[in-house]
Length: 114
Length: 111
Image 1 (spheres, each protein chain N blue to C red):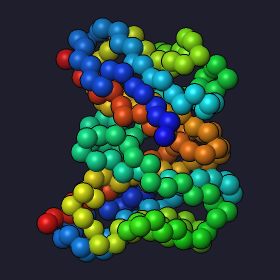
Image 2: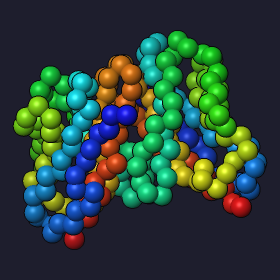
Image 3: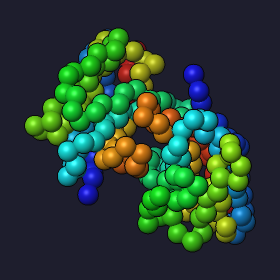
């Protein structure tokens, strides 16, 4: 059965600090997809990234970067030089086959203080 | 950029009443979903819909729930007799090989 674990329930940092959000997943499939979503206080789910299990290259998008380590079943998310607007709940999610359900982690509440 | 549209954004209903939540998925997507998020908790899968029928459902999706795609564009979730514990944010989503897009959600409050 698929499972996603986000062990950090809450993280609080000061603006301009770097912060890493951890995500560990379990799946028996060899092909799967990993996602990160941001949920600001307004409640919507904002798509950040989708990663195919065959693509282990790290990805950088502006201040955001993702580290995919298949050997440890982890897909961690780093925000560099955090800003107050980064304050949100961040969810990691797993999709085992194309078109199937997403299994979400419990989410990490990130608070960036000025 | 294409969007998934959900209406209404907020709905308050009395316990025991029927509610219908509406969604317009992205037009060329083939898979449609409903998810639920109880306040402060994680997002949970309810049901997926493909080729005009339910392709998968969770244990949460019991006989109280039903989904329909009544025309070529709308995708609805019906809760027949709402309970207090149905209070949650309900998200619609649609999927293609290029992405998994969520609507902005309907906040349902059962009183």
